[in-house]
Length: 164
Length: 206
Image (cartoon, rainbow over all chains, first blue to last red; front, side, top):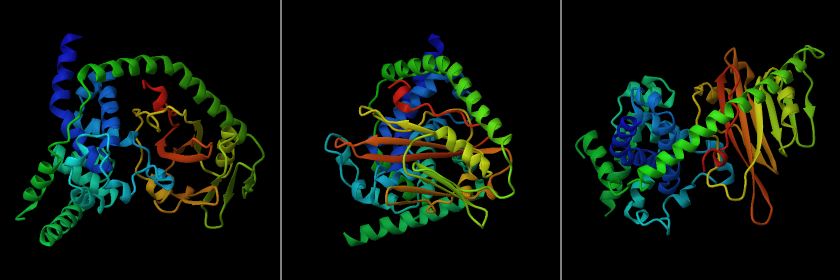
C-alpha cells in the first residue's frame, strides 16, 4: 500500500500542473479546470493499479477531467463559459490575473476539438496516436486538427503582437 | 515565430503560473471515498439496469406497428420524422421510464435519466466510468442541431446513424435559481450495450 501511494504521489507531483494547464486551455476556465482535474486525480487514485498501467496516465486524467466537465449542450444555458466570461479574471483566484486574456482569446477562437488537440500536444506532449485514443477520434483527424489549430493560433498571436 | 515548437513554447510559458493547488492528502482522501462509494454502488447500479431491461421487454412485447406513432405528453414528446430521424422534445423532467420506452418504441435504444441538482452541488455532471463513449454520437446527434426554444429542449436524433447494438444515454439535470426558476442542462453519450447509470458528481465523494 505504501509503495502504491508513493508511486501515485510521484505521478501526482510530476503531472498535476501540466494536466491542469491542458484542461484549462481546453475549457477556457482555470477555476472549472481546477475542480475537475482535482476530481480526476482522485479518481485516478481510486483505481490506481489500473490507471498506472494505462499507456499514458496523464492522458487518462485529462480525458477524465474533460469528460466530467458538462457536455457542450450545457452552453445553452450559459453554464459553459461564453466568450465574455472567458477573459474575465476570477476575482477570487490569485492566479487568474497572470493568464494573459489575449492568449485565452486566441485559444477560445479555436473550435473545441482543435483546442483539445493542441492542448494535449503542448502540455502533455502526446503523439497523434495517443491523442486520438484519448479523445476518441481518428489519428488522421488529430493531425488535421493540430495543423489547423497551430496555424490559427500563430495567426492570432502574431496579429496581436503586431498590433502592439 | 519560426516554427511550431516556438509557438508551443510561447503558450507553455504563458501557462507556467497555472498550478494545481490541491495537496496530495486531499486527493487521496477523495479517492478513498470514491472507492468506497463505487463498491457500495455496484448493487444499486445492477438494480437500475434490471429495471431498464424490464421496461425494454415490456415495450418489445407490446403492440407492434409498421410506423411508430408519435407520443406527446405535457412533459415531453417523441416524434418520428419522415426522413427517418426522431425529434425528442423535453419540457419537464418527469417520467423518465416512460420516455425510455417511448424512444425504444420508435427505434431509438436509449437510457434517459433525470436528476435534480442540489443547491449546494459544486459540480454538475456524471462521474467518469470505464464505459467507452463512441464518437458516432456527433453523427447521431450533430452538434448545433439541438435547439432551445420557448422552454422546450429539442433534440433531433438520427436513429439511422446509430451503430447496431448501441444505446443513447441522456442525463438531464435540473437546477433551480435562487428565485426558483428551473434550468436544464444535458449530458449525452453513445455507448455499446446498456449505458451505466449516471453517478452524479455531487454524490460521488464531494
